[in-house]
Image (cartoon, rainbow, N blue to C red; front, side):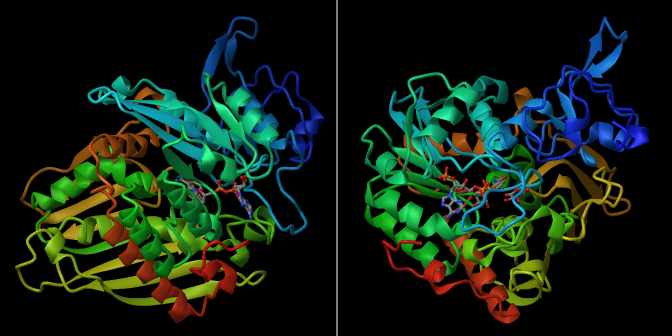
Length: 508
Ligand SMILES: NC(=O)C1=CN([C@@H]2O[C@H](COP(=O)(O)OP(=O)(O)OC[C@H]3O[C@@H](n4cnc5c(N)ncnc54)[C@H](OP(=O)(O)O)[C@@H]3O)[C@@H](O)[C@H]2O)C=CC1
Ligand SMILES: O=C1OC[C@@H](O)[C@H](O)[C@H]1O
């Protein structure tokens, strides 16, 4: 307790000294006072990204957090922290051949989802290989919880999801552990390899959430086995791999989609619609920044997928893709298909001194088009896509630094607030004399993380017999991968030949 920051006044009942070390395991906490510091109070659990819920304690006659543990400067849900550390240290000081993600990195979704069309009564499955503990479990939990939430809460009465199976490439036990820790209602199969999952005749759709380096091999395995696939971003390591995946899906008449979840948020859809309606005139410039102020050396061991070139690590493929998503969904996707044109690319990369993966990348895109009408002078637009894992776009995580996304048109501007991958609010600022500023809060129904919207899209595409989603078309995934290829070429960032290869099958 003595080493805790005094301003937190975090009182931990069942949990005393051990919580100060992330290497300690099995912490329990029955309750602690919410910190007085407003920033900390509003900072979500770094593992599950959900906020702490204060509850009134009769015994304490005070508001307490029921499930909180402090480790170093951060506060976690004790249950989250226990989950990620129960198999060993949350951070591995030594590089290893395989490693999973520390608590500061989100998004370990995996599980198998069964979705049923209420209209057609067709059974559809989304299955998610789930990554090795300790890093993933709470994001996986959040994702699966999202899928199991009542779709009606988000006005999606036409689809339903059910987790039907889970696979881990490490062991069947991990899959079983995940199923029981999340409390997935049965029946739900557990597999100790992706091959077994691919061979399961009941599985129709598979969600791939392995490291970028492995997407191509994993997705090929599944397509070859006749499965529909939803694959995490970045789709693949390079555009050549993405092209082959799309061609394979087309040839085999299978659904395939890059899981750029942000595109399916109502917020994104509304912003795109506003642009298309001309709400801010002709859009000529978009600036998007997805940057985390991580203490890189102390957060990511060199083997971690965020910085490990062997796993196609680096800011660009992991976070930069969200900045590119905002540039593309506003300057490219808003145009009719036949008018969409790839941009010219200029960029700079700063390599991480310990691994050579990019820790910072800045991209300037010049589109030979403007949106929405594409017929007014100057018929050009520019996108600035920034990413950095060492400095933050939102240092105090309160939005004090301003919006991470600015979409600027001839008649005004739209600003987007919150993490670019999970924004919570947008602001429309009309040009002087053209109207009032309008803020639109975009909540996540039923307390979800927002992953259900992309899953709903998958279910609807399958129900309607669509092989690709209009929100993230194959062609656009390929163009964005081409941009990232060019950025890496300009910055001299090369990944190992094996993971750049289009050869399949290849043991990585
Ligand atoms: N949409 C979003 O919000 C987010 C998306 N992501 C994306 O999800 C994917 C996975 O990220 P994340 O969950 O953080 O990654 P982790 O490193 O936490 O997990 C990766 C998992 O993939 C499996 N895996 C298979 N082969 C390997 C290998 N050679 N080395 C390491 N792991 C392997 C492992 O599970 P097992 O052994 O059990 O099969 C491992 O636990 C990435 O594409 C990332 O960009 C990540 C975070 C957020
Ligand atoms: O997709 C992602 O979104 C959240 C980030 O924390 C994570 O690194 C990235 O993979």
